[in-house]
Length: 392
Ligand SMILES: Nc1nc2c(ncn2[C@@H]2O[C@H](COP(=O)(O)OP(=O)(O)OP(=O)(O)O)[C@@H](O)[C@H]2O)c(=O)[nH]1
Ligand SMILES: [Mg+2]
Image (tube, rainbow, N blue to C red; front, side):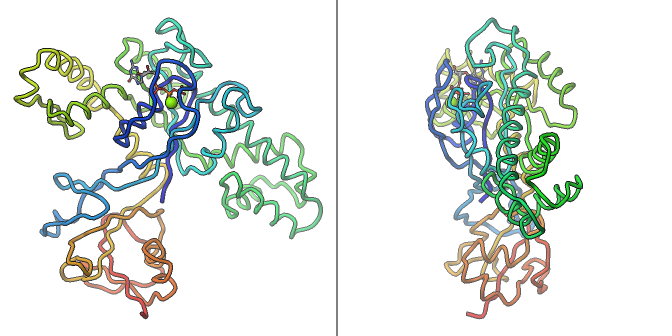
């Protein structure tokens, strides 16, 4: 399953965002390195449920349906905060690296209130430039990639087969063989990795980082008066990157208020319930949150997840069923599961995601809506309802 990593320097709100995204409660505190061990969890990407266009009633199994929107599970990890020198072991050091290596997309959380320094210590609001938070993170990641790629390159002396071994060796930092091979060829780096100069290794490792670790910027703490200026600076400094204004604290507060029956909240619209309206403090707080969030459209947490899953990690959602007439599984559950797969995946990949046996006995698949057979090479698209037919 796809893995998102919530990362950045300490004290920016990573764990708050993670809690809001997963509905769990990790440790949150106003000091650096609250999170030491990564917190792993499941978040949910929003996708339209085919039950609407197919005019059936769905009975979800793995991904609940809320008013026509399926909440499709994706893995997410809250990575320990990164400080300057982390790749050499400073702060929580290399702990962050293995989580980042395993991730398909990164949500770099920054403090848009400008109230924390490079190491996450509290400073006066507006005194720290949020663009430095992104630079710090990417520099650390680049230095670490440079080190690992360089170390591995030095091991491989000689001929063409060795080159393949070098590409393979980069799997440890989450670089697929084909990606390594392609980047290496693109840069025209010759046949002996051990002869690469530092400058070559830098170019190669940077290209690999850019290709394998797509990221967006979650500009958190947007309840601060300094956020707007920082968002503009971030957009200017990273014009190619999505900068999403985020209110992690408010999203968490809204979810808790929803759980306690104080508000109705669907991720966008916030409405006080009768119970909430009786509580003066709740009325005040919800009014404040509602006004702040309305200026940006939403708290940004769900938007960040959706963009990371469907945009950066290039996933599609498909709905496997066993009965193509009723769109159901063998228990009669309609559109039971929603599964995320990488764009370009085929029905065989879908079969493999359901069960390894199903993939090895794959015969053909059926597009249940069009009632047509599709073959091994069909590229699955979001929303397709697919039946896999196997030899046994
Ligand atoms: N004003 C404001 N504060 C926030 C927001 N989100 C988180 N915080 C606060 O920022 C502080 C740090 O939050 P955490 O979620 O623990 O931050 P972290 O990035 O996980 O920190 P480390 O685990 O130490 O790296 C806490 O006091 C949070 O309440 C927000 O949207 N607005
Ligand atoms: Mg934390």
